Image (tube, rainbow, N blue to C red):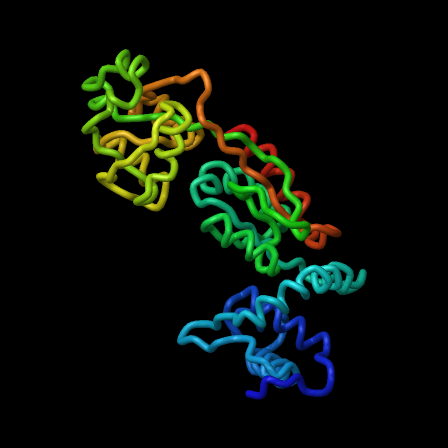
Amino acid sequence: MSDRTTNGRPDLDQLRTFLAVYRAGSLTAGARLAGVSQPTATAQVRALETRMGRQLFERLPRGVAPTPVADDLAGRLAEPMDALEAVAGTPDAPAPVPPLHLGGPAEMLCAAGLPALAPLVEKGVRLRVATGLADDLLAGLRAGRLDLVVSSVRPRGRTLAAEPLADEDFVLVAAPSWAERLDRDRLAAEGSAALDGVPLVSYAEDLPILRRYWRHVFGERLTATPAITVPDLRGVAAAVAAGVGVSVLPRYLCVRELASGALVVLLEPEDPPINTGFLVQRTGAQTHPHLGLVRDRLKVAMRLC
């Protein structure tokens, strides 16, 4: 395919179908979202690629993968095209409301977000939820693949607007069997020395949450190899409750285990480490008709977790 841009401008149908395929991740699902047949969606995407002189998608055995050119185009199209969709309906034939695409940490969304949003389905809200790392989710928000993101980091730049959502405090926990073996008075007095030789359960190999706790509470740099790594804090909680060792978890995630006695807080420092979560959306006009409704429910739910 030539690298030169061809003459002529893409029409709105091509752009609308492109954005639907981009968000859906496949030509078939994108066609349904755009309200056209799969052959029509394929033809429109190919025509757009020809007009632009650039490849927009790599065809995969299952679905399509956007190229960097597609990422850039989607980022520029998302807000104006969504605004057009919001006013495209007529009183006799209103445009269908597309699903709202929500991103965030799997643990927080499952523990507090989705239970709070479930009643909105009866009001006609449709959700498509994506989980992952904050940087990846924020990139998806900028590109228009997501409408709203719960983020553990504040985004940079002016394209995204963020508001503080909730402060989560972290607790050092263990199963009762380990809590009985440890000298908690010594832990309070001497710090991490009381935990020498205790297996650690971590979210990742580099102990990100544990290292932060050690630095903030004990004033030390943690250098250790975890006994178990689980890339999901719910799995970390399960492993600790099973008696593997100790870990650091956000308190909201283990409220039930603490109440039941399955987990025990080993230390209650006066100044526990805290992480602020943010609710992030693209700047400018609110384009999705359900965005405000979902945002407000999340703000109430997350501040209670």
